[in-house]
Length: 408
Image (cartoon, rainbow, N blue to C red):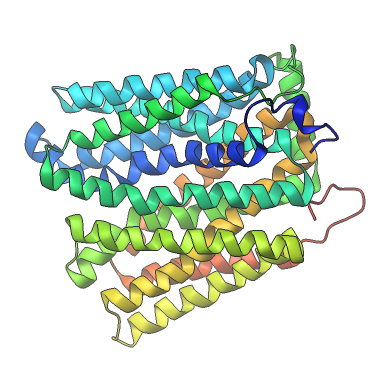
């Protein structure tokens, strides 16, 4: 653990508990996106607005989450992880309160924008904390564990949201977000230790930022997996954005029933990250990532085949997407570990740039692919196959060199 004894930075909380807390921080984003998907018809009716504005509650969230990721890691290198996490969660809570009380679609979007800032903070600092505590193979294994915890977000969020909407007004979804974020804020105030060993007083200066950028992008390993993470993240975003239309167009499934099918996909993420930890322990990070990319390609081709043969139905397509879900976050989580591993001294900056870059690439990729795919299942599978092919090819092309840090 960075050559330091655990009690140097863990007084009351175990390393495993911190890893789990990091997974919960990552889950804030999944809760905030997946929980709102069933609310769109109610937002349209309540505010007498269009579907585009309802869908903007997700897009503006993702925009501000991406922008916040660009800066919060570097700020945490200067002031510490703990205080920045707490500020981020407080901003998120303020946004959720605004969303609950919003009398107009405009104020609802303001609340969602603030929630995005807070969620982006959690994503970045969860990775930075893991890099503070671990390196090499242990970093990859604990990144996998936190991602497995994160996976409960896509499972639980749509189910909770669907249940709340059946029993209460649609704004109760945001009340649930307030409860979850308040819990995390209370835990951080009560038990979370500071994991940053030494604050960098100069981290916000332009010269330091330029030097950090050169260090990150000048490293062959980090540069390679940074780009690959953006492509892998495009697959994740495409599934989030595209599956509701695919299920409605092909199977007539929407609303709460779609939420159930969508939740099943999250089971695959949990299974995949458990397998990922074991593969990394027995073999190495790059091997596990290559294997996962191969599975992604095989499953995406199977989706195309099933759709083209005219035998696709909600059950077999969901089963294929569960198989796909076992692996797409293996690729992304391992890419994060391999990007950050050489940069323990600038973990906050590296995590910030990783999150911003991978999310920006994904946003651009989905903006280009989603309109082309629409609700066509063959096209959806073909788009995933193309992305999986690029990822697998880049992994097979990568060769670790002695002059570069490699998280074995």
